[in-house]
Image (tube, rainbow, N blue to C red; front, side, top):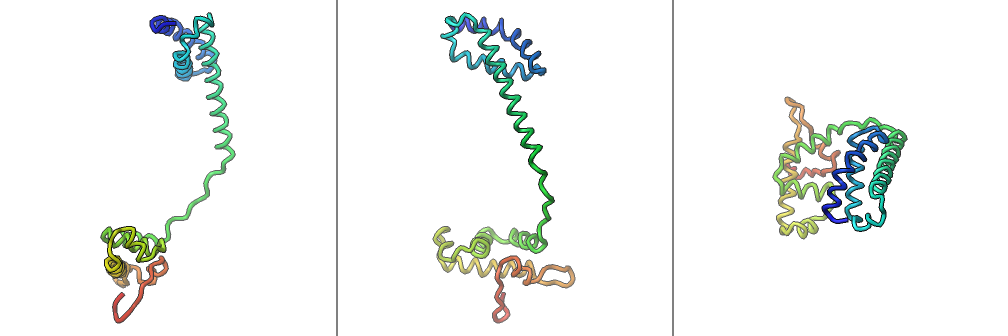
Length: 182
């Protein structure tokens, strides 16, 4: 079948097949989709259609099989959804965690990165230096400044009820008090 013959066949058969498949599926759009998909598959085999002598029957069969396959897939999905229990209630974030995340967001990116890598991901100072390309001394300085800034953001202020450094410790960030420094 040449391209022109195929185009003429498509123009004549598509509305008829869509009507037939609409009756089968009960959904005109679904019928159009499966008939169109069947024609796409037929395009690759258009040279064989003359030997078949029944190209419309072939396309109808393919379209019906596609519709049944879609229906089965939808039914399996629905069964899976019905068997899957709804997710349980997820507790909200811990207030200490929320305070820590808010304080971390206020840090410069470089300090935030080394604090998270070192204290939350347990990466050594040397490995952070290697990964970031920064000297070990720079990583240590960023850790020191980041801890100090976190301590300020989480420091006790009786007037506004902010968190203390105990919350910082509970959140996994060690705070050392040495000679008045945090």
